[in-house]
Structure formats: C-alpha cells, structure tokens
Length: 398
Image 1 (tube, rainbow, N blue to C red):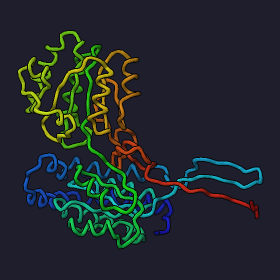
Image 2: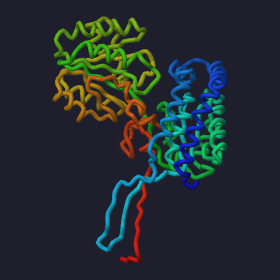
Image 3: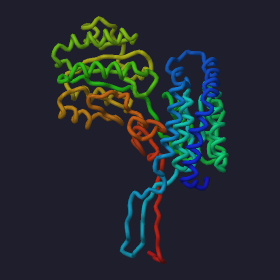
Image 4: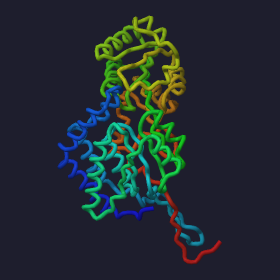
C-alpha cells in the first residue's frame, strides 16, 4: 500500500492538473476528434459521452479545482470514546488503498473520478473503454505530468490498456493488491465485474427512473419536469424513462395527449400501457418486461395507476433503485411517496436529472451507487473512504 500523501501534496497535484487541462485544451479536443472518428456510431448515448468539447474541458478543470479546495476526507473523526480504564478510542476515516475504476466512453471520468480517488488518499487504476483510448491516454499523461512536477510518483495514477480477456484475468488474479472496484457503465459491464472480481465492488447501477403525476399535481410543473427529465440529456443514468399518471387526475386524458404531443415534437418515441395507448393513439407496449428497461435513448413509456400506493409498488418492482419523482401539491402524499419508494434519490416536484455529485454539492462524483453498502447515490469525496480504529493506551491490559 502506498504511504498516504500529505494533503498539501494531493491538493498541489490537483491544482497543477487544472492548469495543465487548460494549457492542453486544444490538444485534448483534437485527440478526442480522433476517438470520435474511430467510433462506429452505433450507440448515440455512448457517442455523446465520448465527446470532449469546451464545456467538458471546463467541467474537468472545475472538478480538479473544487477537489483541491475541499477538506481532506481522510482522518476525520467519526466517533470518540474514553474507556473507564482511560484507553482513548476513536474511529477515523481512512483511505481504501488502491481503487480500480472501470468505465466506458467518458474521458471526463479520467479526471473527475480519478481526482476524487486521489484526493481521498487512494492509488487509482483507470480502465477506460477502447472507444476513448486516445483521449484517456492524453489525460493520464497530464496526470503524470502533474504528479512529477510535485515530486510525486506517477504510479499513483495508472492506466490499464487491457482488452476484455486481459481485464478478466486481472480481476481474477490481479498483479497488485486492489481494495475496491467501481464499474461505471451499462449492466453488462457491471455484471462482468461482479462475476470476476475478488474484492468489494460498488455497483454504479442502471437508471430506469420513474415519475408519478399525482391527481393533485400542478400540470405545468409536471410537463416541464417530464420534458427536462427525458430530453435534456438522454445518455445519462439520471434521465427519465417512465411516467405514471394517476387516473384520478381531473382531465388526465387531455394531459396525457399534451405530454405525448410535446414529447413527439422533440423526436421522442412514446409508448403507452393499454389505457394510455387507447386514449392517445400511440403504440402500446408489447410486454411488461419493458418496465424494467433503461433506454438511454429518445424513448419513454407512459402508464396509469389508480393510487399512490399502486405507483409505489410498481416503481419498487421495476425501477433500477436510482431516482424517482412525484409531482403533487399535497406535501403529505409527497412524503409518503418519498418514504416508501426504494431509490437512492427521491424527489418532490423536481427533475431526476439532479441526481449528480456536482448538483448535490459534492464537487463531483466517483459514481452513483444503487447499492445500499457502503454508500448510496452519488459517491463524492467524503464517501470514498473506509474507517479504522485508533486506540491510545498507557500499558492497559484486559
């Protein structure tokens, strides 16, 4: 295990990284264009995540700067106790050691997730997808430059240029100790990692997020939130895939027709359950299995429910455990929904698109966990630590 770097060193590396990203902005965008040209374009969501433009570079720089300015997450006291025999006992946060991040398509993860892991005292192994290889290699070269210029060994940040077979072999018999693995990507990547890993895995799970339009909803709020959740960015796990409408909503049929029309105007494929399809004239779903699907595309399903409890049960049956929202002016009903929906983030009158480490004030995220251990939802700097017990004595024996 690497010796913990002083916080001043960690912050200096992150500050230098921000400067280098600005200096190399045009070179990074040019290299990224080669990755984009090499990509076959079969997956629209993947291609959007692959792109590095000025906005993406700005976000990388901001992430590095914010991380450098944040409090050290290592060594924070979580619990203190003095034994009757005068032993002083405390529980403090501690670095994991070495973290492996496996991800697809997103070069910005090489900065953001790598930076969060490094700031929290961990060595990082980055295993990016082949589609973003050139961009990732450029960013890792900047990491190494930032480390070297601050007299820090470059092995704190390593890039694993492995194919699937090599990755499987490394997971099953790693050539160095790995304390934690975080896969960021689709369900196939997550299942592959869980199947072959020999250490703890934090599942950055699928979205498949639901929204309930309650019978006491403000319909203008509902319309705006649905449009934002579905169309503002289809390639992210906090996008909206399913809408449930309470049929006790006055004139729910008119509202359903309006939503379908607006979504179709934005080139979204809209499918409905039997009731919605009959009411609005759209195609009906062919199987209830579609309620399990995360689309990552211009596609949405609209269905109906009779009660809030029915909506809660449906969401808990089919959702990915990521995010769910209720649109209602009834605060008691909203709280009932939020207390009982089994998702990492629950919303009242707001878009699921806010489930994000930056939006939650964490200064970025390593991943969004749909596991319940050890951290749920966006995993920020303060969550990427384990803990250990410090016991101070003067010769006490038991």
